[in-house]
Structure formats: C-alpha cells, structure tokens
Image (cartoon, rainbow, N blue to C red; front, side, top):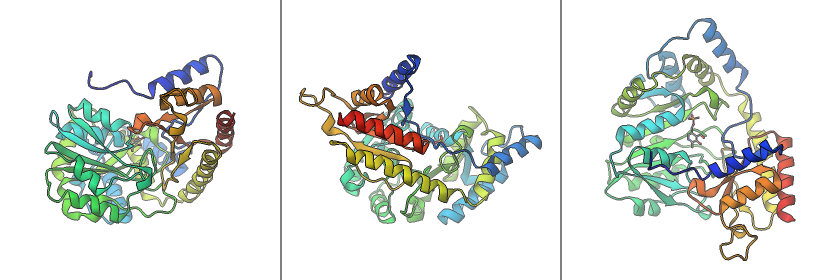
Length: 389
Ligand SMILES: Cc1ncc(COP(=O)(O)O)c(C=O)c1O
C-alpha cells in the first residue's frame, strides 16, 4: 500500500466537501460520467431479468448470451472476430485493467502510459509492484504518442503499452495511421503487451474510430481490447465492462476473477445484452448535446486570458492549458500549482475541476462537461467572471 501516493485530487475533493458543509453549493466539473439517464430499454431489460429470477451466480466470465452480444458488437463495430473463450465480462473496465496488470506484471516491470493518462492507471501498476513510465505527449501533437517518443520510452523491462482512444482527459483519437506507426515500433518486441482502452469509443464528434487489433491482426496474441457500457450507455453504476484478448490472458483473468469477485452482476449482464444488441438511437442526440456543451466550455476558455485548449475529438472533457496562471516566482496571480488553481476556482467560482497533475501533466485542468447544459452555462459564466476580475 505504501507504493500508492495520496491522490492529487483528494485536496480538491476535501475543499468541495468543506464548502458544502458551510452551505456553499459547488458545481462539480470533475466527474467522469455522463449525466444522461441509462436508456429505458436497457433499464427495462434489467427489470425483466429480475422478474425472470436471473439473480443467481453466472459463469465467472459472463453468460453465453452476453458473450454472444459482445462478439456481435466487435464484429459489427470493429470487424473483429472472437470466440467465447476470448471474451470476459467484469465489474467495469476497471476490474479488467487491474486484473490484466495483476496477472502479468512482475516486480519492477514497466508500463508505458502516454501522458496525460487516466488517473487510475499508474496506481494500478504500482499496486502490482511495477512502474508506470509516462511518455509525454503535447497539445501540438494532438495529445498523441508519437513513434519516436514510444521508441525512447521502451526499455528491456517494458511489459505493456497502454493506448486509450478517445482519451481521458484529452478527448484525442488515434487514427489508423497513428496506430500503425506506433504498433510498428513494437514489431521487434513480441514480449510487450498492448492494452487498448476503448471505453469512450462511441463518444466522438466526427473522427472515425480504429482499434489497434484492426490495424495489426498479427498482434492478436498480445493485445487486450477493453470496452464497456459505462460511458457508451451512461451505465457507470451498473459496473459492466468487457474485453477480448488471447485465450491465455482471458483464462488468467477468469482465474483471478473467480477467486475474487466472481461474475459481474447477473442483472447488469442482462442489461448489457439489451444495450449491445439494440442500435443506439439515442446516441445522435447525446452527441449533439455534448457538442453544444463543448462549445460553451470552449467559448469560456477563449474568453479567459491565459487559458487555452485544443478542441477534443471525443469523450466529454476539455483539457485546458492554464500555465500562464501558474507562477513559482511570485509574479503570477499568487497561484503556484494547478492544484492551487483548482482550489481557487472552488472558492471564487464555486466550480470544481481536476488539476492536470492528477493525469501526469501539471499546469493544466480537466473540465468535464457532462452536466446539465443550463448549469454548465452558469458555471462557465462564474469561472469567466472570477478569472477576468
Ligand atoms: C480511460 C478510462 N478507462 C476505464 C474507465 C473505467 O470504466 P468502468 O466504469 O467500466 O470501470 C474509465 C472511467 O472513468 C476511464 O476514464
């Protein structure tokens, strides 16, 4: 446990709680979940599963019906073919990622994470005795890892490369060409595994989507493709993620899951079948709502001197560069870290954002805009007023 540091976001969360106790309402722009309701046909499928008494243990890796729906999803959306032995359903994508590290990492192994990265990856790696290796990306490069950067990050101890697209916190999407260039670097290192975290796949504004296995089918024995319904169907609380990978790895995940949590909830599995088997008619309206909200946030950023951001291609975050607001020499506005800026925004604009240092990229903040549009407008107005005054 000593390997895992205190979360850089904890200070901000503590401040939000303090403010709330003293009666000040703070808008949370820090949550990694959509505010939309789970689609009704999915909720109804869950109610029906309960009525049918589908409330018992299932096979550890998921029911055959769910696996069939996952296999169909991969075929339909990604043109990938899998057999049921190559599929696992778990308590969220998070459990799959954690268990994949637990199953494969030895002490002092290294995992390459393009930074900024999702906050949980480094601690999951540390908890499994290994070392996260941040490979920096820049807004200028679309917040994407380049082949050159990857080459310099690889060492004899590298065990995994993690690719997350659309990415949290940047919303960046890797094109086929990007993936092809990156994966070529790994040709000479068949011992390096690749984790494709595709959890935000459908939440894109216009860019097409590609997943690494489509580009390199020859990497099939070392590529784990992780996805889930948390973000695609606003189902974060249902805890249902899934993955496709080589049999040896899925078997290892099966063993770990069977001795820890067993199957994902039988009711959530039934709901996920409905989610995956029904065309996502709701998605067009979700994307257009998210686009409206994105514009609100980008307009706010444009209005504040010293805030800049690259327009994201997907997910529901804006990763803003606030470096001009941060000064260690005392010449700035009295704010010396992104964590202090986040605290300042709570106090002065009643808005909570996540400091970039939580994602391995200080001097930035992540603004999640998956909240009610009117409340978002109001909050952005408060931030603009506080910053411009
Ligand atoms: C990049 C990324 N991967 C995985 C997850 C976890 O998803 P789940 O809710 O399925 O565990 C998240 C959640 O925020 C995420 O941002």
